[in-house]
Length: 232
Image 1: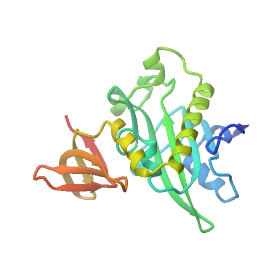
Image 2: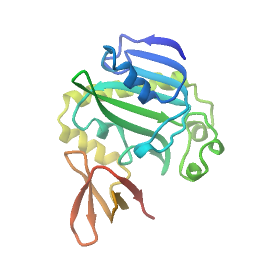
Image 3: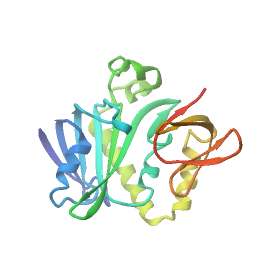
Image 4: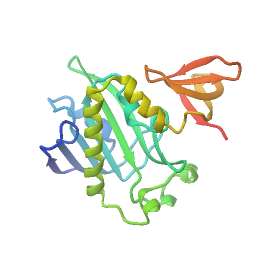
């Protein structure tokens, strides 16, 4: 149920309009429904809870705070949004947020929907058992209750500035910053693409957004899509 609509004329694109829902099945799916009408670029769907959140490859994702900007399709948009390739934000090797970018056509126009799920005040023992050892929350790290409204305002200001920079900066410079923050680079990884598995070292981020993996024989491979695991 929609419980509010917020406007901020000071933002350039992302978050100028925010639609606030009590609960939805999925913010990405809600965004797709909204695309049937004429929505402005940067529209954000914010839900306190979602019942059917998804990560990559349809995995379940539980989060008390979701921000979902609808943006015009731009090359490499998913790259600027993540910190651990391909879609995790991590703090001290624990996942604190997840990002799911989807491209969809509506009325012959290509849109990108970026779903951002952040663990704010949820207790770790309320998360799925299989992720508790690898996850964290803002509340756990700062030892304080985090006001979702204030956090969302801060997050959208940062994303809006980053998106504006993204539109006006050569991708080579953005990728340089991304490489410096990407915690996957330099790690030994296992990549599964379909039925094929490859093990090697995460070597670089290519200009096309792929993770470059150097295998044990010295060959280099571009990883775009599949399952990636960091090995100990």
